[in-house]
Image 1: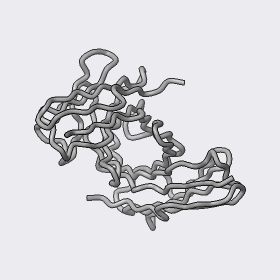
Image 2: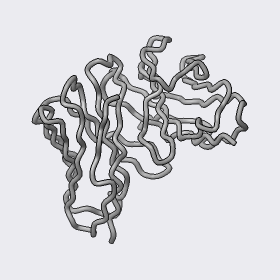
Image 3: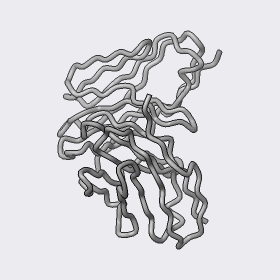
Image 4: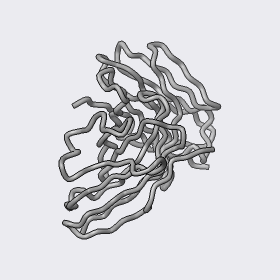
Length: 113
Length: 114
């Protein structure tokens, strides 16, 4: 059964460093999302992406964040200058029909020291 | 900010017990209600997407109901098994979000003891 994959599973970085989190969505899906969960808090939406552009972004998704679909398979989230409060589990999701069922990856745990 | 609440926060039951938990969400601008099952170190697994008031969905021993007018959904597990142990998340989809931004509750952590 097709699934969303994410790499790495765990990333440790120093404050101020750039990180790129990678996702391979399900191959025939057209809608892509990033969410995150800070430990002990709710899963929260970051951004949705369709047709090579951002469709919607939350107040969390400031200028430090960017997303890209560099080729036909990968979907990346870049954090330009990480802060301690960026430490969280980051989930990628994809969907075939937009506002319908979203399929999630297993997450990347980002730890900022 | 749209608020989605789940209760209880955690639940411990014996194998064979039936159980249920609640998700409450805003009753205005409703588009869809999603239930996910999430085991540690795995991907959250989609259980149901519900869109119509009065919807009831079933998958094996798990079923869900939806009341959009009063803003709640129930998830039921009949005859719980240890493999049902997981966190169950609900997520609200708002009509104003064309691509389906989801607002999540904190989840209900279910532990089923053999």
